[in-house]
Length: 379
Image (cartoon, rainbow, N blue to C red):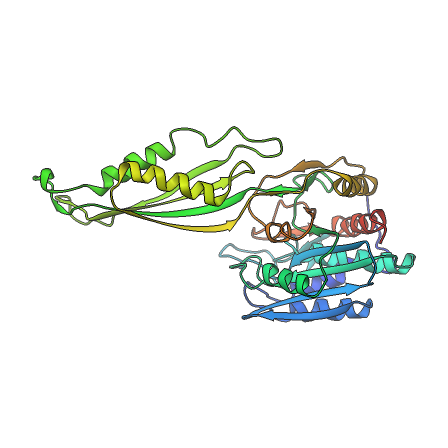
């Protein structure tokens, strides 16, 4: 089925302009300015927010409630070493497909939301407020992006009633998946210390590899949990074991390992750290444990707002979206600290791949979905 663009809002031209900005994280290359110009044309008040070297923006139209916010990112991953059949930053349309880095993840969704806002504003008086939280730091360190903008929003009375993140959540067709939560992620870097010495005199050594291996065996011996109502079981994966010992007749002084835990709502990073430390202490007298947490698990409990979103998507697409919490982390992990949040965007089949692309019909259909969402929430 061909989805003709609304006369007051076709997402394709803006999507092409955004793709033509080679905003490989953390570079902006004019992407935020392109978006700000379009939003101002639609009547939005736009506030550029630069934190560190990162360009972000917050835009809003309306002052009353309900206040619905769209969140997204203009930064993209590199084009990669593979051979593209088109220029990854040309925004070319070929055989009904829009090609380019960010077409799917997620400049296409940003353009679709701007088009939806244009359509909504052209067809009915604005009753509430529409805003956009757009960062240039989602694919990178995520330090000076969404988290910092949210702090500014909280300090300036701009926290919305509900936020929709435009990540490419769908797997096979538009309308099949809404994400209402994400697992947390913690990376642990472990160093176990021993006593270096000659392998022929093991009584004079303390082999840290033996201790580390036993500790890792204990950590991986049993599942962390069996899952929860909305989450699959948590997982622990050892990703490196490193010694760096060039000699086969020397017991090394230390051994390192790195592991990652993707955890559901039955855990917190603090509780997992305590468990890791207690387990390591059973096998190693001396060790260090360095943890980095990219996000805690979160869940937007299904209720009236999620139902509203789901019904709007069904009305626009004819599909009953499945509620899901799988996949990696997203900026929704920051937003969940401030307001209810869900994620819905394009089909994610080609995101981060060579020849990333999206059907133009699907891009226009997503604008229609977002317009239905705005109407359903009564803005």
